[in-house]
Image (cartoon, rainbow, N blue to C red):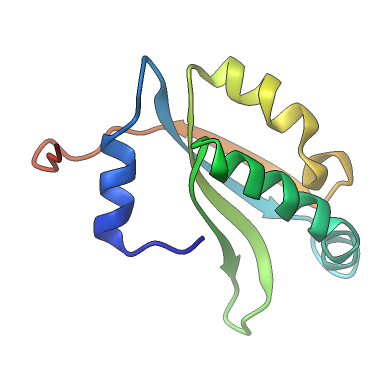
Length: 119
């Protein structure tokens, strides 16, 4: 599930159809509630993430760490037809949102640099 940067750019550029890549940045509720909730539903979150990865919906996912090395959030680069589809097909069912792990979620459409071209 980990990519080097070259592989990540390749995945972004081989998107099929009219889908658009998005960057999702999510920050957890602070301790102690956030980390406890994260642990309690982590397996469900990872299972869903693996399914989306296998379907080509999640291109890259990683945890955000603080200076102490504790997980404080997540980033996901994903592929959906629209932000509305992203919310309906994924975020409305996301265990970390349903179980109040993520306090703040930001969604950004992204465009890879024009010099990144792959066949």
